[in-house]
Amino acid sequence: MTDKPITVTSPLLPDLNELNQLLAIIWDSKYITNNGHYHQELEQALASYLKVPYISLFTNGTLPLITALQAAGIKHGEVITTPYSFVATTHSIWWNGLTPVFVDVDPVTCNIDPQQIEQAITDKTVAIMPVHCYGTPCDTVAIQKIADRYHLKVIYDAAHAFGVEQNGISILTAGDFSTLSFHATKVYNTIEGGAIVTHSAEMKQEIDYLKNFGFQNETTVVGPGINSKMDEIRAAYGLLNLKKVDKAIAKRKHVAQKYRLALKDVPGIKMLPEPAGNVRLNYSYFPIFIDKKKYGISRDELYFKLKDHGILGRRYFYPLISSFKTYSSIPSAASSNLPVATELAETVICLPMHHLLDDDDIEKIINAITR
Image (cartoon, rainbow, N blue to C red; front, side):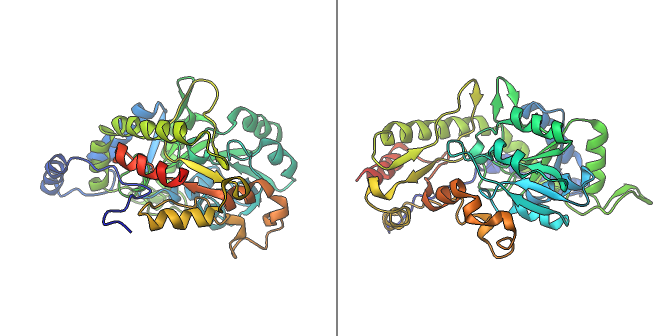
């Protein structure tokens, strides 16, 4: 192990002097939470940057998923989703007393397969929860056609999709809701944080009630809400990071281009293709998939060899959500029902991907893999 390992991710950090200036203002105001000045300013700034009509800030990325299901008025039934995601996606369904139904994913994009969605619909199905995996847009047109045909809600887990666009339009405008994560590992972060994107002022107001215990005013509670507000300190931090995120994405793009060029002819390594059409990516992750027969060693062997060389990858997403004890008894969780997702989970490594990687780091990673 080297003295300074190459980490799989690194948080985007605001300028400390600028942050201290904003902290001094917050300290002087003594207003540190409850929809303060910086909270409101960040919502406006993010709506403009992300090209979305309305956005509500949260204290983390899981609570928006839970709240979106509540805001959709879904109280009973089944929600079709992907097993190839971070476990919070399915946890949000469980916390709402709903039943997750897993369907397989597309082998090219790693996103939920629309054909599999339609085959899984029953009279109990109430919603679809897809994930823009690794920031690659789902087939939103096909998914919406299915949702319209069967009168289903669509809630996108867009935790990886900050700033992603198709034909100049934000991918976050698809469906009834899109949720974001601003965790420290993401392209854009507020240390911890998240958001819901919605389409109307009325729905934003409903969501804002739900994230503040359901309070409509000082004496009126309109629903069983929860406390999931973002505080002023993280909102100020987020405003400063928003000024830096474009440069960070440009650096990530450079890393991705270097990886793609160097690894394209290595036997046994598969990479995600670049999306067709006019897509603006954020380069949030760079997964590769290892074919042991062609590459010579397994994914796990490579993972630990890289670790021995001070290169910290991540087997993301492994294991599948459907394999966890909490969900493995669900009939749709059987691996025979999810052959593509199972293979992806058994072969994936996400390589280091962040704005602080320099060319020496990249060359070291490439050399270790090709060697």
